[in-house]
Length: 365
Image (cartoon, rainbow, N blue to C red; front, side, top):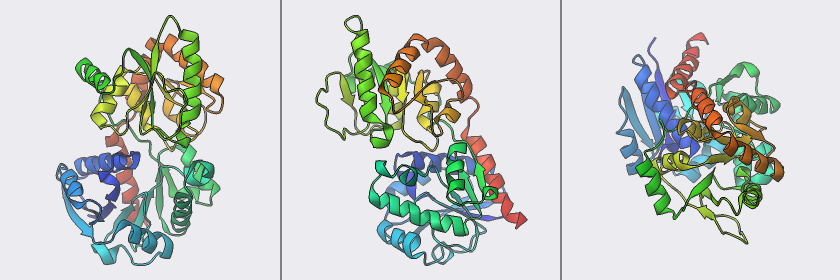
């Protein structure tokens, strides 16, 4: 039976993890599903022209709808008061896939994706406003949502701890945002742009959750071991957010495009991704795709994603991170080979097919 499937694509214009997930999911759903009708919608005040530009690159059977509700009003209306069914805004639906941002009520078979619960599992690393919003959304999810998609067993365990029924939860792994290594020309261009001379270690994301302070401390230890024979830089993708007394050889790129990020992975000696917590950890797969060895945390979802092809470290122990970096540099050839093999197991097309299977469960109710 043909279904009308509504997907909230509001996050799609922001180059964040949730944005890329939404983009790849919708793009591949339209490619693999030729039977159902899709309605893609979002807040019309969320940079409408940017949203339209992005959507027009999609191919497939879909319609577009914008609702004239500012993000702050939508948050108050749907997450706090939990009023106004989504159908009264966009029309009738058989399946409604809500975004990671808001949980409007709905009469349809309701699906949502929760990437992680870090704001409430690690509240000390998150803004108070984000914590409260996550708690409100989770309350409605537990009460109303028919199926919850999560990217890892780690996030599933967190959800079950907060009272979600296991039968509602479906683990669907995500995939890399890049399709292979960048050319040497693009790597050289990236290094020139950010004044990177020589070799570098790479950190992706800059925040308390990304463990930036300990990564810098571990880098200093590695540098002391390697010098004077070898100089190596530490490059962070993201805005500088903390005061560092010694910034020598440490570079913060600020926001960069996905193409530049691909070049950053491709030129790095090692990706160090020793986060405190992650719902999945796409940068691990991105690095694998680009032939970059990976050091990552031995907790949260990261061992799942690493799948035995990365060096695992204790993210709370600077010495452990430093030793992991040295080990990765010494065993780079083997790690690159294993990483490429692991990356082949993950694809956005498979994410779309498994998500479509979840939508089809609407027929069983």
